[in-house]
Image 1 (cartoon, one colour):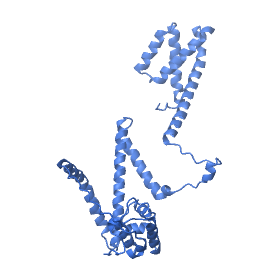
Image 2: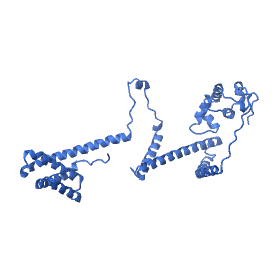
Image 3: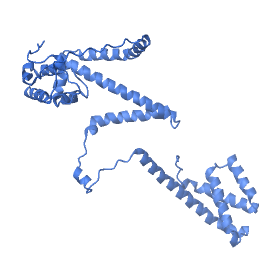
Length: 339
């Protein structure tokens, strides 16, 4: 164990300065170590470990302690004597009194015990599995290596667990809308998980897009636009809807023109032509919205004939229009579902 240099202040009077942070960085560089190496030797793991060391060296840590500096020096293979010239003098103020914590109530202790018990099964499995995997001297001879990997594995697991909780919450919110089924939601989740794994392995997640920032700011070029899937689906829907609408309109117009051949037989005068053409359109819509031979089609057909003044003529036009629409309907694309 490293003994405290008498030239350094007691812990109560310890003050961390930017100069001390600079000295720690110099000692690390002298030892040929990286920030992540120091973090690992200090037993710190996880995405924020390197950042914590960087903040310490820059004097940006919120409350760097005397013990933390000692740990850092030990990780560098240095000693307290390497920083004694930077040690501030201890203040004359009396030591701070320890804050006495108010005893927890029985209800609070019961709640904490139950909360702790909820995580025990998961933690037991994690630690048992990490021990089994990493306690292999043939794979990793160094205990420090195994400990560092254990910390990393623990961090990965709880990161995935946090993501799982967020995913489940989003799934419940989706299903509450009633727009989709659980099977569809699980299908999308599986798709995204496979996509993520594929992107991770292929390096897409680490790929950076080269950009001339000055050219973008000056208006000489623009960044690529990313169109969200929802926007693309809307555009695709509009395209399909227009195609369906235009083709249906073309079929109805064709039948309207063909129906003119019935006008002489029905005695349609020039001033009544438009009315008969509109009747053709109405029967085409009935044919489009009903199935051949269905009771719904029969009822709607008869209701329209009953409204006509020339019922016989209306029936003849209706029979012609529906028959021709059924013949031409295969040329009309299926109406897209949606809006």
